[in-house]
Image (cartoon, rainbow, N blue to C red; front, top):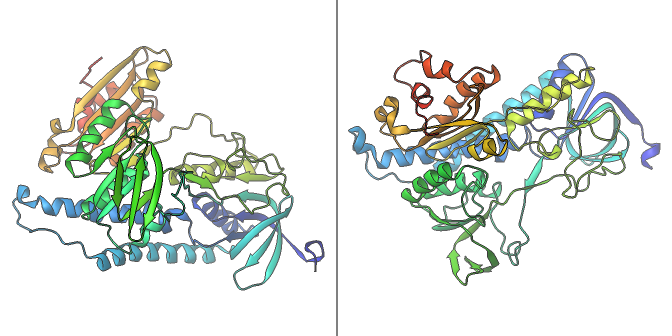
Length: 462
């Protein structure tokens, strides 16, 4: 029987992919009485809770505790040398993930949506054929369709890399072993989190970054400070590293650099970005356009070229953070209901969960100067914050950029303990367009890390 001869099921919302934006929108519309089909290929709840944010931050917690335990004598405790138990570590990670997957599944079913595990392919505008995991097939057409298929790890076109079967940010989560030697390709936030984590677990870690500094879009002073802390914790960092070839020989991997050096490890982790999960979706058939990398083209309302067809999250080229995906959900929900909400002017925060962690929102100093504004720059060493001293965790540097004329905060980079929590205070002030003086002079509880904002906005270097 051809597709055209099959019974087409009509629904109010067809969700292709079940990431953060998609699953939240699908549940909302289903709870409101809408007919919803959400098809997900494999990961119940999406990438974040299965192989990304949640499991990695679960393991970051273990790595931080291992590092704290090793220096517990500074806190008046003698704990001895921590021992990494791979089985317990894996059980810790899988327990957290399993609980969240089951919670998501219960929420899906309780919402009243029709949740389908299977593979969808567009066969017409707003219409997909689904190959369900039980072998059956369905054809579903949505009054509105949202594409939320996410991304997959990118394997760079380096000779021999794919053949060497590198670890990725997803496969490394299986935790089959703690490599004695690990080479990380890429000095961005994904690569650095894993590098610092596995160094705490006992691996000899080398990070190769092709640029002149880690975190190439960050100001050099912040990147340099983080580089110092990573090196103090045993991570070897090589910048300007051009990889010529990768060769696997049984249980070892050799990475040949263009300058003639050869590095040897047990495993190599490819942390060089992600690709859109659009191959095989049949987007052309649906009238949906993609860019040269395969990301779905959308306007600032997250609408595609096809009528009543939207894309959200990573696959739409949005910044690859779960909190951005959640905001995409808000935008599309409003627009499906006749609104005109857009992505223009979004203030996007991000956090790097190394130890210390780096939290950033708004413009860097370099970006602010490029706008031609008259700016002021403030810097504060974390050791100046009393709470950091009580934690015996004084590594870090806070930095703020302020518009000299309006006194509004243009951006901050907070490198130090608990920075991800403090960042929300600054972001709220930026949303409200408050002058920096409100944080400089405001009464903030003592002793907290947020109290450091009083001192930061009085510590001008420019």
